[in-house]
Length: 221
Image (cartoon, rainbow, N blue to C red; front, side, top):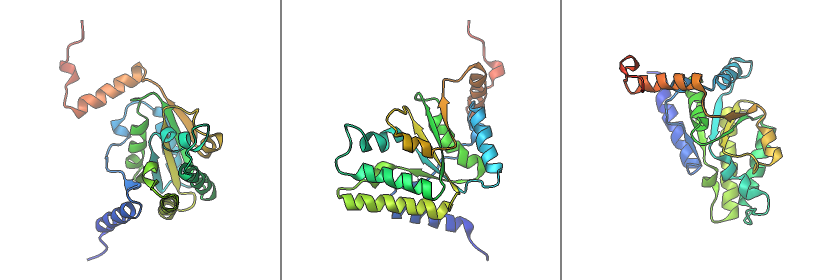
């Protein structure tokens, strides 16, 4: 009867998530950029990327990157187990050797950084993995190293060389080493509070989502 593509996709999800102890999981949310107001410049940037000669085949989301690795891998409070340092090393070398590009999103809480990373893959039909770096750490250093290598191998296998884009969010950048920030060569975007035009766009999206007829709403006194 032909190839069961939906069944193969579910099999792939199960294999990836189980083999990495859920350090990598497939994005389950279904939001797109149509569900997100504002950030017009970023939306256009990603659209141009996907319309270019080498569109991404895999997006990888990393939330709160400033708390996951780098705050414990460098500086006076460095992780003395070596696990954080090895994870940082693997990410740096993998991004360099496999031409993995990246966006770095920073700004205050609740400004849409994580939402943008969710919407990008669904908007352009690109598979998206959520990478929880903390899940690669184990009680033994050797096991932690094995886990991070396994995660990087999966990412390289699915996306291929030059086909992976990382989306990392951070509330602050001062804890991120310069060499790590340099790997996110597609740009650093600051998410500010929405202006009046963006708030109007957000209001329309939320009104439609919750079935509110704005024409019937009374203006505040």
